[in-house]
Image: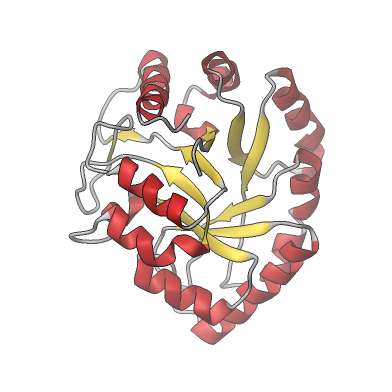
Amino acid sequence: MGKITLACRVQSYAPFLAGAHGHLASLGIHHVEIPVPQPAEVDTVAAQLRRFELTATTLHGECDVRRPDTAAQVAAQMPALAALGARILFVSVKAEGTPLPAVYQRLKAAGEVAAQHGVTIALETHPDLVTNAATALATLRGVDHPNVRINFDTANIYFYNHDADAVAELRPIAPLVASVHLKDTNGGYRCWHFPALGRGVVNFGGVFEVLEAADFHGPCTLEIEGLEGEQKTERLVCDRIAESLGYLRGLGRV
């Protein structure tokens, strides 16, 4: 793996999104994760990315497995991914009582649609289908499609589980990971505490070692969500992104 393909989730700059692209460009970060734009907005988004010499490695879209038309919902987003050159559709999926056989069938059909466009669907580390390694493995075994994979979030594994460890959770699923969110945390269960990388408990060096052993080549996307109750400023947000980049440079990964 060596050097990673580093991206940044543009929403990390919220509520100061207007300056996000320029700040990323000034740091030398060339890749982003952005929401799937509406059809009428695709050209505008593409032009803005070109202006700052950015490319979209991942688009955050919709894949509602509670709906019988999941595959059609995914298909409708494929033109935007093609136009922006993105090959990963990042989604959060929740069964919420939907029978699992139906969920798996819908995800498999969505994966088939994605495969036709050279896209991989990456399921976020969220309950109730990708809560941890065990549930993620059960979901992907049920779906059984090579274009449905995992987005491993290094902090969510702590947020949604008691006594978790990112490296231990990653090991059994690493071959099934298509993308990664690099996010730090104080490790507390349901504790909204996501500082700059290196200020929490996540062993990023260990995470990269596991990914390297699994021959992972997908994007690693910075996601800095801040601390509960704090008063954000644009300077604070930008400084955390820059500090996180410096931390990764210190690890020799960028």
